[in-house]
Image: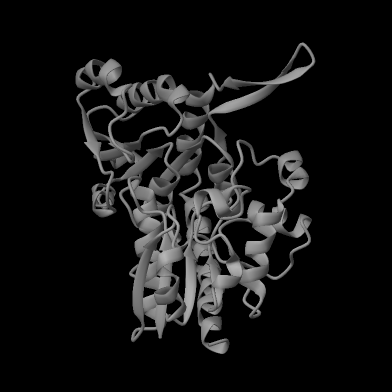
Length: 354
């Protein structure tokens, strides 16, 4: 079997994690398959003959259920009918600033996206979804041929089946990783979080991990980080840098894929939600929801405000984790294992249509 994989791994470490774990899953279930990779951010008109020589085209994760994904973010071709092979949407997701009920149930897909969905379903394949909010949005738009698989990045094949937390526990933490914010407006919160971690955990190693390169804001906060004895790391450009999390006792931060990676390794992780991706993920896995912003009515209009009570929520989340013997983490691990079975069925359905 020859599989064409369309991905967005260019700079952000999280995109490399999605791509490589999607390929690992495909190779796990089809060990004799040949994988051919293509960037989704460029037109593939000239490569259509070689793509059509494959058995299937897989869109590997990412914000694929959003208006503008096709053809703006993924301008594969100006006419989807030129793709002559089956198309699979593998563990893709919906994105919005908020994942509240109004946002989910008022979202309407535009015609180009509906054309992509039609293409993906024409051979009977289901549309793979990374979280429950994505499922809700698709259903509300009239689509029920859906598989709730989770994101490909959820699955570290060496840890599938493990449901117990076996780490040291928070009181014995020696290495803590903080992932950076994607929204520049949250750099003040990132500094507050780092200061809190130093106060709360005392003399431990702290790594501040940037997933998309060092931001301009680094210049302003670097003196503070040096004073706190925090290591700055840039892991952009591949997924190799995720190894910094392998032996950490706790991840806490803003990057969805840092959260996912640590959960997939059965580490402790707390995500601070910047948008619908984070809140939908935590809702799906039953984990604490701590938002970086909140909505408030001012002069008859809704306005976003930075959550200035976030650190209190973080402290409560940590205390609750320890007091409840990490049961919420273990529940998340169990749910990831259950959704892996959906992912397995979804990927194995390829052999039924080619």
